[in-house]
Length: 476
Ligand SMILES: *[C@@H]1O[C@H](CO)[C@@H](O)[C@H](O)[C@H]1NC(C)=O
Ligand SMILES: *[C@@H]1O[C@H](CO)[C@@H](O)[C@H](O)[C@H]1NC(C)=O
Image 1 (cartoon, helix red, strand yellow):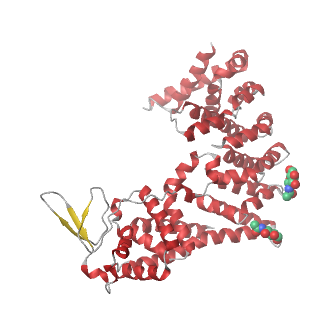
Image 2 (image 1 turned 45 degrees about the horizontal axis):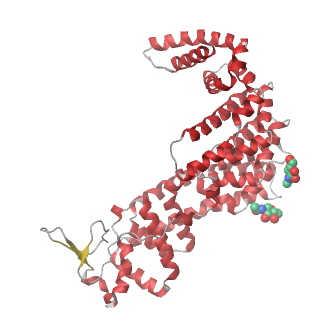
Image 3 (image 1 turned 30 degrees about the horizontal axis):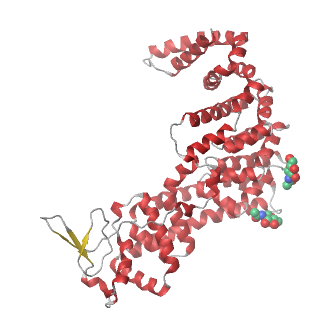
């Protein structure tokens, strides 16, 4: 595991540095040169950077759409050189390696292909020389958006072009860029590593699935798998070889360790990964996780199941709606009033707090795009706060202030605060809440004073104190 970790990490650093080094021309050349496998991987990687952050906010419907649909076929504004002098329009990207003339008086720029690049004269045909245009463009001027477009265009053109022409063209480009051989070597290594991640995962899944594996071997496989699925692309690979459903089925196992580690892997795979979240809820993971949380299981199992549940619910209003429908909130409430599960209480409160705030933030969003409006629409079906009030959480949450840790109290205070408008009546009649706030105020006044003495005027304790005071003030 440790060795793999290091290898994978150094490779991914290597990958990015190579990507940085590579200019677009070479990247595109390789896409055409290598197998379709690499082709897909490279374009996927090249698109990952912007895509990941977008994905988190995408709604469910859009998630199912293929990446390619995101790409549009609009051409780049690129200067297509021929062996005649042509005027370069303002704003056009000029391919590298051209002869360029600049008229200093008018600022007009003319460009054409250099004479010696024509090989055996086959470049006389302007329709052929045209094809060099999008390949050789100076990478310095590219944005991610343009890169996407160029890749989309590239995919299209490789589909339609005659392979022998393509080969001749590549040879031509290769002659002009010597350094390519070195880069190719680096790329081969990279490709090896790319296959390795998926391969390792495939082996781990097989180990886990094999009836010949011992329980210990299966747990070991899950433990290792958890490391890989943190990466968004790896987690998506789980969907391809049926690994995800296998994991979900593993939640049914009678072995507590199995349930624990399967939850662990699922939680990691779903975390900030909408595609996996969608597939997991379709695979029945939500029900199974709730069953684990509602039945007699060890704390370790429940802890991991709660982790997986949180990963499934966050930023996924559809799952939140199903969670309420399936009685998930009651399951969590029972956990929160159960003795011996205190470790889980603060996690549950944090989850519910985050879900409430998540919805509020969407409501307040002034962004009027269709996407945001649709999200608001989806969240409107998640009646979380009313369910919380109805199920008596207004009385449960203040009790959790008895927890000793500052961090836990901070989380509970936040929750008490966010529910103020909805639980006001219950809070006001809750004498133990009143008493508790009094005790906490005393404690944090002292701590805040010490903090100030040590020179930290705006410290943590002062903040907790002001939170307590503001709640008490509101309840007067
Ligand atoms: C798991 O094993 C079963 C039977 O051994 C097989 O049919 C199935 O395809 C395997 N699943 C995966 C995802 O490898
Ligand atoms: C898993 O358990 C659920 C009930 O919790 C049951 O409906 C389902 O059939 C079980 N699946 C497997 C594969 O054992």
